[in-house]
Length: 239
Image 1 (spheres, helix red, strand yellow):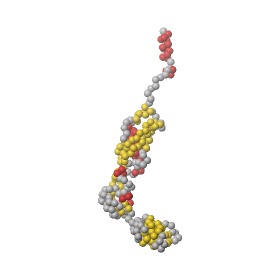
Image 2: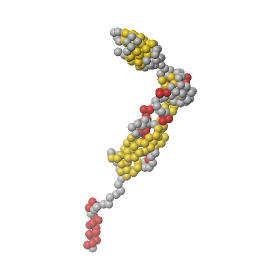
Image 3: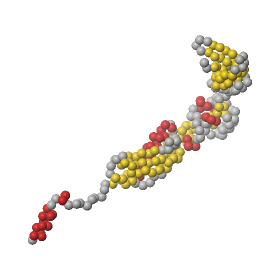
Image 4: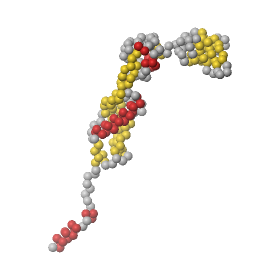
């Protein structure tokens, strides 16, 4: 009887009087789709200044994440020199309550279609461009090397430096200004300010387009000076 009464007394004690087995820790499951969405948001923001049609073609990430309970945040960091298009390896950091719980590299690829000037036909070296020689199309920036024109008017009047095939993007290093002053040509040198205007006869030591800075020789003093091309017969000294 005494043993039975002791058992009843023990059952009546509060549970806090005994050590309890620890239950499983809370787990926060973050889906693969959620992780990819965070990476995609970053890529779209990175490419926004390109003023192009952006398509995220690849995010090489797989699997759900099992994380401790808490506030989950994502940090995605691209290489410093990556311009926001083409293939890249980005760093993905996943934090829970500001503590890094996962850090890995993810391969991505972004297509950026931007309007650019292309050759409407084969353009030969030495041709001076008119609007009919050019067209506007959308091209993937990853397939274009160098700075390109996005406005036909910017290219009109420039001269082709080397042959361009039809439909090829027209880059800024493909073209050059047309010189209006030739090397050896006699020009008028002008030096002026609000008070005085001085002119002299000179000889160009190099060719130059409008606005170019060239070296000219003052034929009276034989001194060589730098002057800016104004038109086909005049250069101006800044002073």
